[in-house]
Length: 369
Image (cartoon, rainbow, N blue to C red; front, side, top):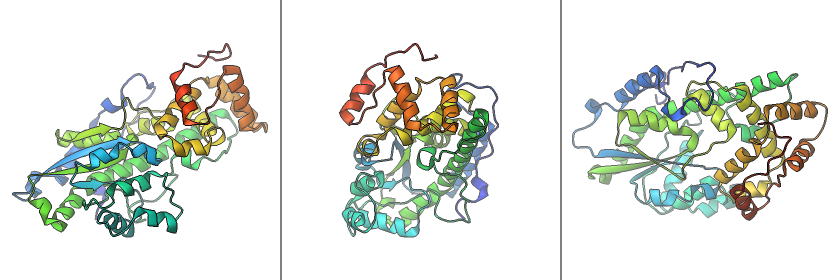
C-alpha cells in the first residue's frame, strides 16, 4: 500500500539551544536523512527499472500557492514538462479524474467556479488554467483523503486556523504555539514521506497509461510545491544529482510560522523569540491585513510585509500585548497604538504595499532591539 511505514521518515533528534542564525536549515543533515536516502534508493533501485525505459528527469518548482498571482511563474516550467504533479493533499480519485479531464480539454475550469465556491483568484484555479487542453499526463503523489493512511491532528497551517485562545501565562502561550508548530511539522513530514514513496509508482503508472512516453529518451516530470517543502528536494538530490529545483523568487522568505515548522522538520528547536513572533504574526494577519489585499497580490509580498512589521516588535512588546489582550483590549486597538508609536502605516493596495516594502521603517525609541 502506498504510504506504508516502510518509507516513513525516521524521527529526527531534537537539538537544544540552537538559534536560527547558527546554522542553515537547508544544510542540516543527520542520520535520519541518510537512513531515508537508503530507503528511497530501494524504492527507485536500478534493479526494479525495466531495461529500455526512458530516463526520468525531475524538476521541483517552488512558489507560494495561496492565490493565482503566486503561480504566474509555473506556466513556463509547465510548457517544458512531460508529466505534471501538483501539490494537493487530501485528494480523491474524482479530483484526479477532473484534473486529467481538464488537461484533455473535457472540462473547462470556468465551469468549476459556477458549481462551487472556487474563486478565480485561487492557486488551484490558476493550475487548472495552465493545464487546460495541454493533454499532458497528470498525477498526484500527496496524501489522499484516506483515514487509513493518516489521522488529522491540528494539521491546518496557523494562518488558516488561527483561533485566539489565550493561556494563563505568556510562557504557556508560547508552549501552545510550539505544540501547534510541532504538530504541523509532523504532518508535513508525513506528507513528504508519502510523496517519496508514491513518486516512482505514480510515474510508472503513467508510463503504462501513455505508451508514447515510453518511446521518449527522457521524460521530464514537473512537481510544483510550496517553498516549505525544500527538504523533499534535498532528499531526492541525495539519490539523484540530476534532480533540479527552480524558485519563483530568490532569496526565499518564510512566514514566521513556516520558519518554526521548518525548524522542527529539520530537527531543531523553536526558541521563545521565534514563538513570540509566530504569536504576533497570527494576530497581525487576522486582525490587520485586509482580505482583499491577500487575494490580489503575490503571497510572498504578504510574507515580506509580515516579517517587516513583526520584526519591529520586541519579545517584551509581544508579552505586553498578550497581557492587555487578557485584560480585554482589542487586537486592532493594540496594534494601532503600536503602529502610531513606530510610524507604521499598513498598506491597503498593492501600490502602497510595494512602496512600503521598498522603504526602511522609521525607528522609534520605544522599539527594543
